Structure formats: structure tokens, C-alpha cells
Image (cartoon, rainbow, N blue to C red; front, side):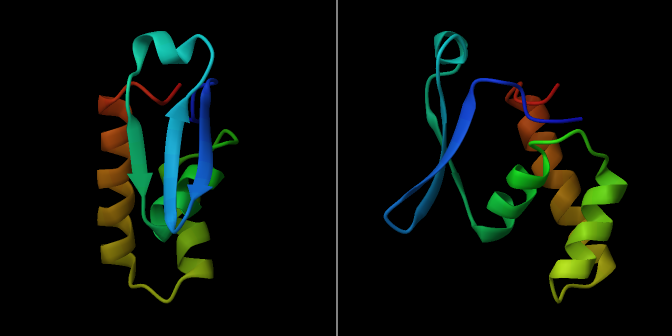
Length: 87
């Protein structure tokens, strides 16, 4: 899975925001705000990856327990799928 083309992550002040550009802006109107871990996962999803790889990466880079990381990743991925942002 990976983020569909047409979505850009930007830092606006202290906020991490995702906006649709080009053709994607015709079907997606809005802005997505991400916290720092959401930004981390979004950046990882710029390349083809799996939830297991996201979990391994997050456990290696963050001081977080596996159950919390797994739940956060699952919730984040489901939100992206629900919004139609993943291939």
C-alpha cells in the first residue's frame, strides 16, 4: 500500500497538513491535519509498504510499546483507506 498520487504534505506554521493537488483536488476537497506520528507514517507511505513494515519502523524510531503502535497504525491506515487516499 502507498499514498495515491496527487496529495502533498506541507508544514504550515506548526501544523502538518495534507492537501490534494492536480486531478486529486477534483475528488478530494479539504485538508488533513497530521500530528508528528501521522507525518512520520505519511512519509513512510510515500513508498510501497505494509502495516508490518510500518510497525517495525515505528518501533525502531519511537519509544512506544508494540500494542499501542499497532493500534495507532491500524487506525491511521483505516482513516486513509476510508478517505480513498491509499492505492
